[in-house]
Image (cartoon, rainbow, N blue to C red; front, side, top):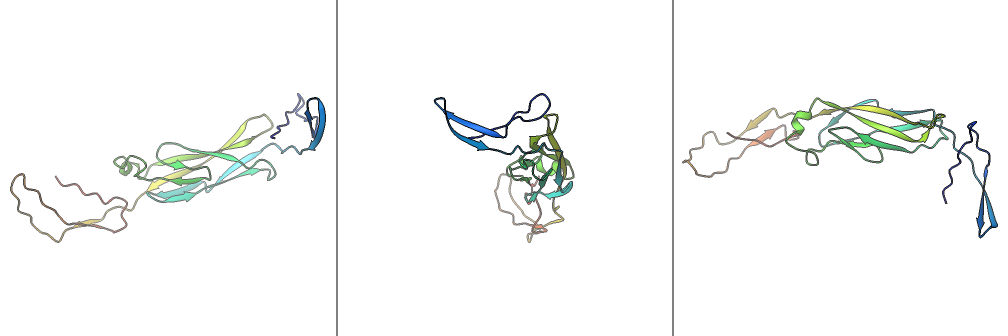
Length: 173
C-alpha cells in the first residue's frame, strides 16, 4: 500500500493518519510522516573525464537529507548512465566508427529528483563529462616489405602501441 499525501490549497496536509476500511468497516489506522519537499539536488563530481571503455560513478544528494533521495539519471548523446549514476562510453555499445570523433567532446548527465519542491516541480542538476581516449602512438610490423601479386591474399602482423590504446583497428589502403 502506497499513500501519497496531497496538500490542500495552503500547502498543508490535513491528516497524518491513513484510515483503512474494508466493506465500510474501519480495520486499521496507519500513521505516516510526510517527507519534506526538496530544496536542492547536487550532482558530484560536477566535471569528470571518462576514458572510452571505462566508467565513472556519479552521485546525487537531495536536500534536506530527510527528503526523498531517489533520482532518475539520464544522459545526452555519447554516453549512457544506469539507475545508480554509473556513466560509461563503450564503443562496442555505441557506434564504434563514430567513437573516435567523440574524443574531446563533452556531454551532460542529469539527475532529476522524484521529490518535488514547494511549487510541485522536480529539481534537476547535471555533471559535464568529457570523453577521453588513449591514443595510438605507433604501429609496428616485424615485416618490412611484402611482395604480393594482384588479388593474392596474405596476413600481415602488426603491433599497436601503447598496448592499452582505446582503438587498435588498423586500416591499410
